[in-house]
Length: 155
Image (cartoon, rainbow, N blue to C red; front, side, top):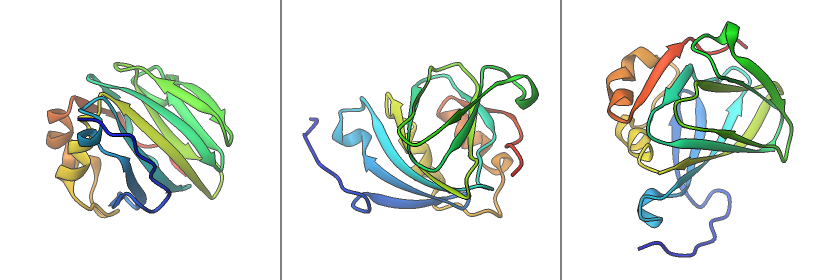
């Protein structure tokens, strides 16, 4: 059963994911599967590859820094590009390709996935580091309905 909660920065379970620091702020188990929320601390060179989710919508709130978002196509070159500043809210519906990258040296972003099952991917892959590539985890991503479409943006 879902519970009301307040979780301050640093109180959630932390992961390292391809160099970025990810904190699980609200778990899917705490919301009956409705949503999972993560706080993502990224540096400029820590961008995920262009990808698409088939099972959940994804939203972001930029807490600090400036972040560039690519969306809407299967190639970075043909995506729409939007820059978001602190306080910006970005919505990415399922089936719309997207990626993001800080355009400042660092950024903190709240990531919201609904429904929240994709959280299992982060727990399943464990703590990753920059020596692993998206190809190394493509099978696990596919189990969660996520497909890689293009390389990450370059810093």
